[in-house]
Image 1: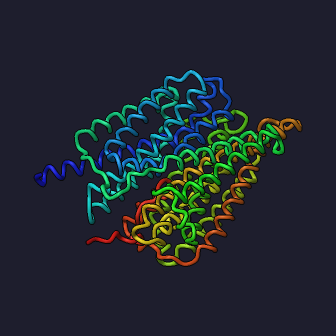
Image 2 (image 1 turned 30 degrees about the vertical axis):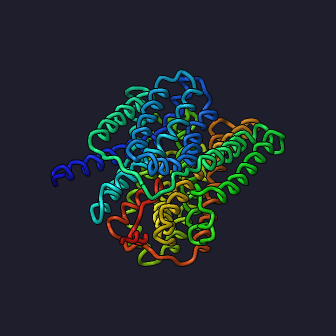
Image 3 (image 1 turned 180 degrees about the horizontal axis):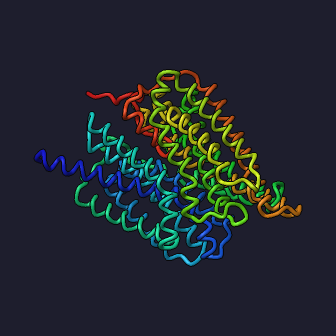
Length: 497
C-alpha cells in the first residue's frame, strides 16, 4: 500500500471515529435539555422520563466493556458499524415516538449503541496508528468527545426551537449514517488474534440486573415508601445480582471486571472518585435542565437553558487544559482533593437556592462546580491507568469507564428522587410551586455536596501515584476525563518485542 493510501485510510479512521464520538456525546448531554419538551408533547411526566437518562447509562455500564471484547474477537470495524447502525435505529425510533415509553425504549437501545461506538471507535483508532501519530489521534478523539459533550445542551436547545425536540435525533441519525459509509470505505478490519474468544455475557447481564432494581428503588422509594415490600425487594434483587456478579467474575476465563485489581488502593480510590464525579455532574445537569425551564422559577426556553449551562459544560473543558501541569507540580491526589473541595462548595452554594433567585445567582456556583470537577476528573482518570502494569491498563480503563456509567445512572436517579420527593412534601405543606422547586433543587444539591466531600476523602486515601507530565496529550485526556479514560504520559507503555 502506498503512503498516500495509508494516509487516506488513517485519515478516514480518524474522521469516522472522531465524528461518531462527537455526535454520541453531544446527543447524551443534550437529552436532559429536551425532557420538558418531550414531556409536554407525549404527556409523560418528567419523573418517568428520567429513565431516558438513567436507562441510557444503565445499559452503557453493562455494555461498555463487553462491546470492546466483541470487537477484539469478531472484528472492531464490524462491531463499530453495528453500534452505528443501532444508534441510527434508536434515533429514528425516538424521533418517531408518540409516547414517553417509546422514547425511553429508544434511549435504552441508544445506551448500548453509544458505548459500543466509543469502545470500538477508540480501539480502531489505536490500531490504525502507532507512536506519535497514535498519541495525536487519540488526543483528537478525546478533544472531539469533550467538544461534543459541551456543545450538546446548546445544540439541543437550538434544534428544539427550530425543528421540535425530534430534530436532534434526526440530525444525529444522518451523521451516524455518514459515519457508517465513511467507515465502510476507509477503515480496515482488525481483531486481536491473541485474545481468548471467551466473552463474559453473564457479567454484562448481571451488571444490568444489579443496577436496574437499584435505580428503580431510588426512583420510586419515596412514592412506595422506603420500608415497603417493593422497595426492599428491589434492594434485595440488586444485592443478590451483585453477589452473583462477583461469583461469575471469579470463574469466567476473561472476566468483565478483574477482581484482583480491586486490591490496588490507588485504582479503587481513583475509580470511586471517577464514579462520584460522573454522577454529580450528570445529576446536576438533569436538575438544572428542569429547574431553569420551569415557568414557576426561571421559565427559560430550551435554548436559553442550553446557554445557561455553558458555565458548567464549557468551564469543565477549559479548566482541563491546565490540570495536568498542576497535577505534575503539586501531585495528583492533592489536585483531586482540591477539586472535590471546590465542587462541594459550589454545590453547597446551589443548596442555598431561593425561589426568587435569578440566573446571575447561579453563575459563580456553576463555575465553581465546573472548575472543581475539572481539577478532580483529569488526575483521577490518569491515576486509574498509571497505577497498574502495562498489561493491566486495558482492564483498569474498563473499570473506570464502567464506573462513569454507573455513577451517572445511580446519581441521576437519586437526584431525581430527592428533587421530586421534596417538591411533593413542600407542596403538601402549602408552599408555592416556586418555593417547592427551590427546596427540591437545594436538597438534591446538598446531597451532591456530600458526595463531593466523599470524593475528597477518596483523594486522601489514594496515596501517592505517578502523575502525567502535562503534555498536550495529557490536556486532551483531561478534557475527555468526564466521558472516557484515555492514556496519558503516566500510563505504562506496552512492552514491545
